[in-house]
Amino acid sequence: MKESELFNLVNPIVGIYKYPGGVLKIKRESKIIGRFQYETGREAKPIMKFSPKSMARLVATINATTVQFNSFLTLTFPRFYPTDGKIAKEAMNYLLTMMRSKLGGEYLWFLEFQKRGAPHFHILSTHSAITPRMRIYIAEWWVRKMSGSDWFIAAAALDATMQNKCDWDVMSSAIAKAYYFTLRKETWELLREENAAAKYATKYATKEYQKEPPETYKNVGRFWGCSMRVSLSDGVYEPMGEDRLRQYLENTDHATSDWEILPTFLFNVRQEPAIAKT
Image 1 (cartoon, rainbow, N blue to C red):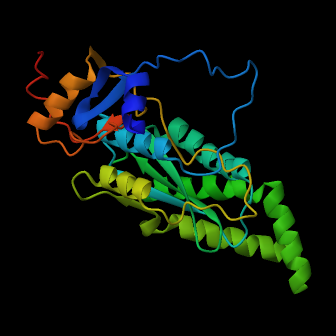
Image 2: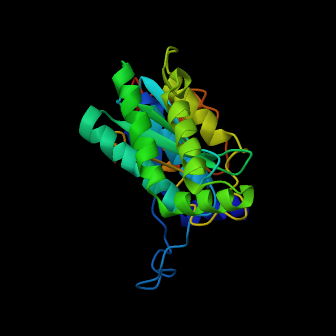
C-alpha cells in the first residue's frame, strides 16, 4: 500500500468548512488519535520558520475574509534594530494598539527580514483615506516606542562609543531618520488595484526569500497575524466523504482533483451551485 493511501485510510475526510472567496477547509478524523497525545503541560515548540501550514492559513484568511483592505503600511527600523522577535513585535503591537484606539479599522500584518538582517512589518489596513495628520500619528507612535526602548538606547550608546560621538547625537539622528522614513507617502499607500490585498499577502506567503531569520535573531514568533474580524472562523460545515469531494472537484476541473492527498485548504473552488449530494 502506498504511503498516500495509508494516510487517507488512517485520516479519512469527514467533512468540509466552506468560506467566501472559494475557500474550503478539509476536516479529517484520525482513527489512531489518542495514541500520540501530547504530555500534559508540555511546552509548545518555538516558531523558528514560516511553515507550510501557516502559509496556507494566511492565504485562506486573506481570500476568505469579508473585510476590505484599502491601504498598505510598511514599518522599518532605522540603522539600529532589535535582534529579538519579542522586542520587535512589542514595537509593532504598540503601534497597532494606538491605531485601533485612535484611528479604528482592521488589519493584517506579516513579518519579513531585510538584507541587512533587520525585521520589518507590512500591514494591510481598512483605511481608505490617509490624511497628513494620520501619517504624523503613525510616525510618532513608531518612534515613540522605539526611542524609549532599552535595546535602542544600548545600541546607540555602543555606536557612539565606536564613533567617538555623543550618545544623544547618535540617538537623535537615528530617531529623526526613522520619523522621516515613516512619514513618507510611500510608507503608507492606498491600494488602487482590485484584489491587491489578497495579491500582496499571497505573494508574501509563496515567496521564499526575506523569511529566513538571521542567525543572531531569536524568538522569531509568528510570521503574520490579524485583527479579530479578519481572522478565519469555522466557516459553514458540511459532512462529506473523500469520494464525494473528489467527484465535485473533478466535475469543476479543480487542479487538486487527482492529488493523492488533498491539502487542508483548497482555493478557487467554485461553490455555486452547491455541492450535489450523491
